[in-house]
Image: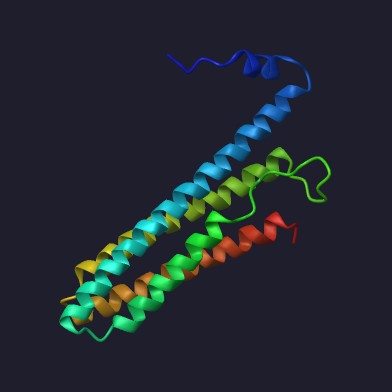
Amino acid sequence: MGKETSIFEKIELLVPGFHGYKQKELLREDDRLIRGKVAELLGQAKRELERALQRCAMVGCPQLMAIENLRKKTMMLEGRIKHAEAGYRGYFDRIKFKEDELRKLIEYDANMIEDAQAILEEAKAISAAVANPQQLGMAVLNLEDKLNELESVISNRMSFVVGE
């Protein structure tokens, strides 16, 4: 059985003119939830990289600085996503999102989820490969590529949000 709607939600869905506002608000909430999930995945990846750094320091691997740089970039991207412009615009804002534009924003967010999941997997691979220098080098390069892909999606999303 589905979730019951509150009396206010029923009114918003039934009264002409309110339906669009309710749908837009639901899309905005979806956007916020998606960005929260992406930030959570990047936080997990950052913790994996911190574990890899500890292991790397213990065995003296040559990739220590590269892993630290990846950790910093992961942390920076996590912050950008947490504080990214949401799909909400007030009545007097210059740039307003219509429902189709909000859907495009959510497509960007879906790409961010896929990229963040790939980043987490690559971070785990780095953590697991600390004892194998050749495997570690490839894992570092793979993670760097994934972080660059996510950074590109974030930049494109930001350009879309500001109307460029």
